[in-house]
Image (cartoon, rainbow, N blue to C red; front, side, top):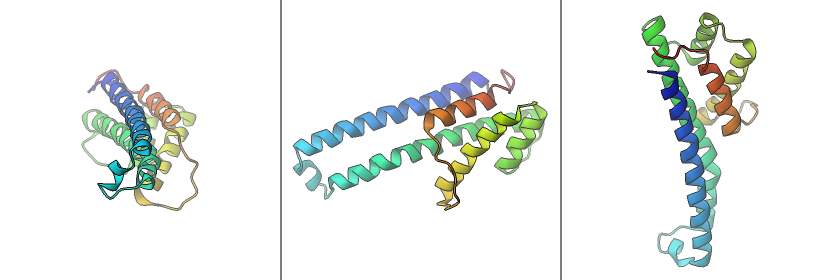
Length: 148
């Protein structure tokens, strides 16, 4: 695997999110003009609104999963064939690759937000935007070798 492949996957997920959100906005506009389209499927504009509200979280989880897959690939091929918990994995890679603490801290904020989404945890965590989280994950990956 290469660092560029990891970057490309994160970029693809962000682009897919943007495309899906634009498509949903268009569908909402069409449904407003043709309400029967939704009624025939026993849907309402509220259903579309709920989907729209979940897009960020859905794609956020996908983005973090891609990052985690990349990091685990690096770990297994370059360090040892184990499956540490994500927090331990981040700290271990950061220590071995001399990743600055502020970079690790930002990725841990992304991880905590992802955990809140995945586990419906009510722990107080700052909401993370896709673009900011993506930058944090890319900064962490930048400290990995070009190929592994």
